[in-house]
Image (cartoon, rainbow, N blue to C red):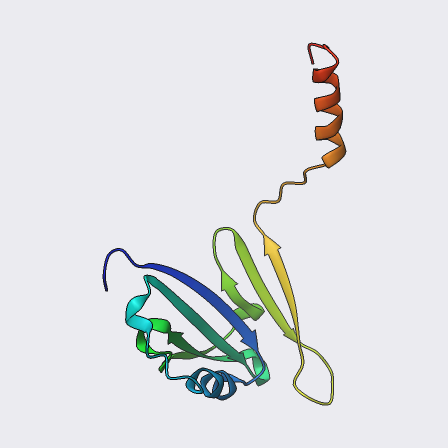
Length: 129
């Protein structure tokens, strides 16, 4: 791969749907991929019964040809564990496959706009704080 390329990845999690994503991406010829310096990657994970996952990757540089990656259970429902983010899933009781997701940030900053506004107003009024 050319070192000037940069990659953007999108992870998708859902009940079985890899074939549908593959069909949508195969509907185009992707004949101009060699003209772009961006690598767009879809990492598609199906979450089935018992939270068993099956994952495939679709890369722009390969004209979104399907690459099967792995099949494994989601331990304790954990689908993704990265330093900044953790995604877990549970099966919900419905008549069809249905999943519930929880996104947990490792660090969260809560910024109050009014605090910024008040600070700016005090500074503008000549106050030292």
